[in-house]
Image 1 (cartoon, rainbow, N blue to C red):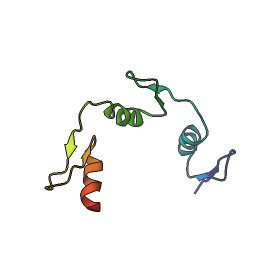
Image 2 (cartoon, rainbow, N blue to C red):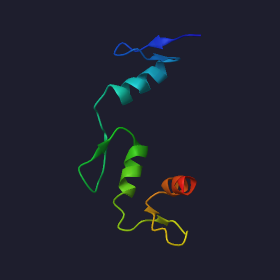
Image 3 (cartoon, rainbow, N blue to C red):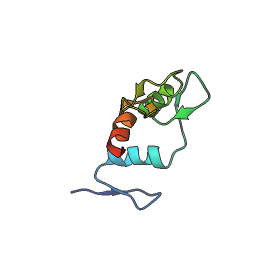
Image 4 (cartoon, rainbow, N blue to C red):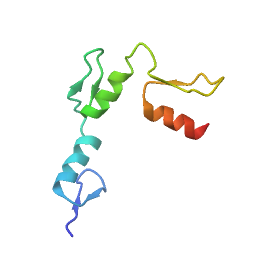
Length: 85
């Protein structure tokens, strides 16, 4: 098994491609994915997509338990709310 060590920290990766991804996300400040609604920039398209959801005028998901006013922009957060409560 080949292991590649990051020259910038102690991280050990199992492939050159995973080392490149590690360096891009942990050691580079480049944020090529820009929000068209504000000045925010992100390292990947997924993070940009999740950010754009925060610009919605209304919450897309709400708790249906009587008396609970929890709302969320994402289904994931609503599911986490159900698990906690």
